Image 1: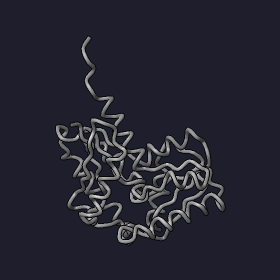
Image 2 (image 1 turned 180 degrees about the horizontal axis):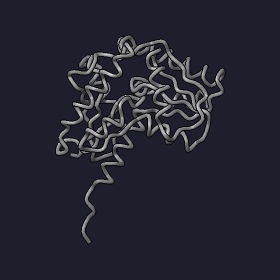
Image 3 (image 1 turned 30 degrees about the vertical axis):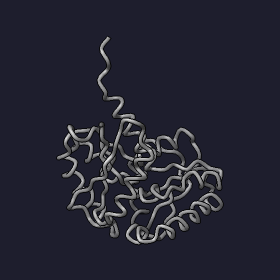
Image 4 (image 1 turned 180 degrees about the vertical axis):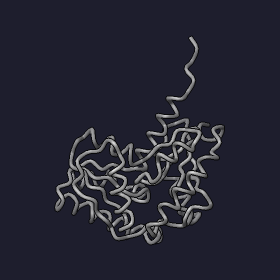
Length: 228
């Protein structure tokens, strides 16, 4: 069965949390495809300091260099803000999906002012760096921090959900957002995008769902054409 690698930039998740995320990822897979979460053992446990983003990119690039095309058809570089995406693509022998790039491209089609809601102050800095690099994007209404690092959120997903819902609501009511991007893959695993859309009445771009679907399209594009 054709397989997608979902490459996490962190190595500190518990086996239980990794299993939960794989279940979420698989809900977005079309028939005939499977996915496996992978990470470099040299990746930082969490991105709790600014330097950790650079460390994560260095570890990912070396890890991607050794991806086996016979095992994985496509890699999702599973950081919602696409750290080191260009370097990852240069190193990896198979196509690499950037969740942020794919999501903001879709958001640009809508053309509505977009707020990016992310986890903490370090991710806010990374968001602005990402926005400076990504070529196609909608108008940006705001970048909002939940002030809740992933290392804390994974131990209290209910708190993460509550905080995300609050900040998304404020992005719409205070910042004039007419669309939202969940600026962390962890947020995309909370399964709340549809509820937010219904409650707030704006499109919500989920990096997990979008990246997995983009990866699936890459797999299909590379399939050999039947002979006639």
